Image 1 (cartoon, helix red, strand yellow):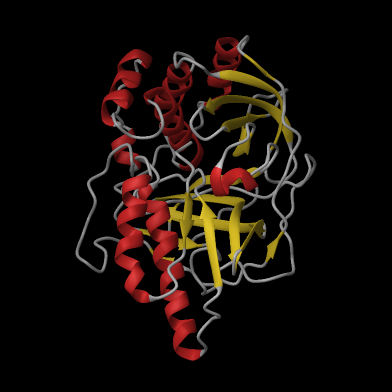
Image 2 (cartoon, helix red, strand yellow):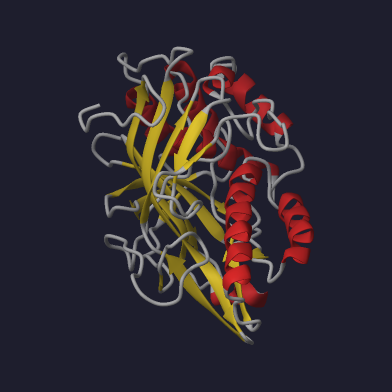
Length: 367
């Protein structure tokens, strides 16, 4: 989804400003908020650890960038881990992954599904028919969008002069956000240490209230986007110009972000699928597995710059959206030569998406 380059967790506080600057510069639009959120949480955690017990100076960990979905205030990523092409599960043991209290395990891997340029428009047309049912509720000003998912990712771990791939354990992520994007709550052990989570209500500690856009869309913002597929795609290309490894890849990534971790109105959801069918290089994948082991068919696009294929996974029979994942399908050079084809850099499964009346309210399983 983006130019996947390694990210180093700073060994001390003086590297923080440089790292934040580099991260913001390297990441394409639509990923800044999530990576900043995770990075700051990890920096704060490591600084607390340094005060109590300084970590060994020889240990560094570089995370691979991963598909990230920017929500109104911050990001709400969905995901889970898959190992060797069946139900995915993160490891339970080993060294901590530097993200909350998550344990680490081996790199996530999968069988690479066969891709075909045929049938993309037909599949996306079928998906659009079931993606926005008539009972899809609107969100009132005093309500919240709730999204619950399972997520995991692979990263490069460096100890001394040796680097290897590892993964963060499969975990649950819950996020609530208001339709205007200024109020919210996040529970995610990869981001915060407290089981109770943390506020996403704006303005932030610096007094900033981001203006809603494709990079951090609120429900109210989405409701105002054009629903003509050609006009919508033109707007996406225009607003993401200069980001990512190519305009087409960035457009595909942006649509995936909007489909996966936001709550588009029905007409916009249909338009997003129809717009995606117009992007050059989009293919179907005959078999893809989401984070909780559900097999489906995928709409995907290969990022030629990184060798990674971004996949949107749908139930093969009902065409309901299941989740997303990023799979390495081509070899690369440099430190990332460690990332062999079949490595799952990020995987997700959406478990629940609903409208609720209160902040931190969890809908019933039937909701």
